[in-house]
Image (spheres, rainbow, N blue to C red):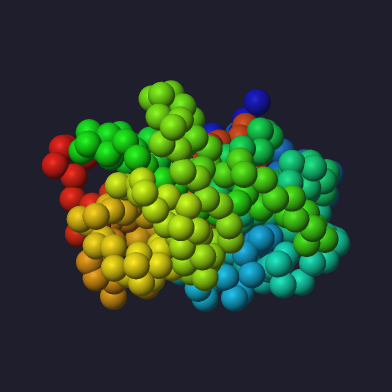
Length: 345
């Protein structure tokens, strides 16, 4: 059977261009000569242009469902950068992205999603919600939620692997009393309802690592909200609970939490990088003012956002049916809060 890729190959254009021209997408800018050549090649190959009449018409646009509130985006620039990646790539590909649902701000029943070309879900929503979404729109891309176990496109950073790498570095540098301060896993549904668990990726990896290395007696594990205020409170609790046997290393789930941890340690005159070493996640701009500098895991937020849009466009243009999983590597940015003496992985 002749497909879009066959037409594209003979017309010497991309499959995306063929799909959008044959779908009479008014937003695509191609020369009349190219447009005519595509239709001529399709006809010569007996490609059934009219078969799309029998497929429910969808708008060539992408909807975004985010579990992140606008206020959280302002505090945690990871999500702001990710959103910028979504918008930049959509603009580059001339795809509309004019329907944004922020579940934390405006819980609402999802309606008319079957009219959109594709849906991008940012953040962790419940498995049932993913199933409900798939009933309305099969063109689904899920960002930062690798645990859903559904047949959908996914894009995320490999945080569990990096968590293990950092913990290995701690061990190699003589640290066994390793603590973890992070946030709860918060799965949302379409009405803004929250399911809160301790099964967050970094937290889970920490607990497994400590168990697998027979360090249960040194396990010190504190969870709360993903905010600076929560970080300060949790760190203060950790210090109060472990006065006679403080951890020598703390892994922190995100930079906003780390900002609060710094405050709590400084208040107790604990020297960061000497008395206790710290590593965090996200490498956001807000940590640039910290002294000593915070060692943090850099995540390719903008690239993740752009990749999600490209996967969505592939679905819109019917270039594939099988789901794709894209994982992005992370990088440990070394600063004064933890300078490993062994080679980082």
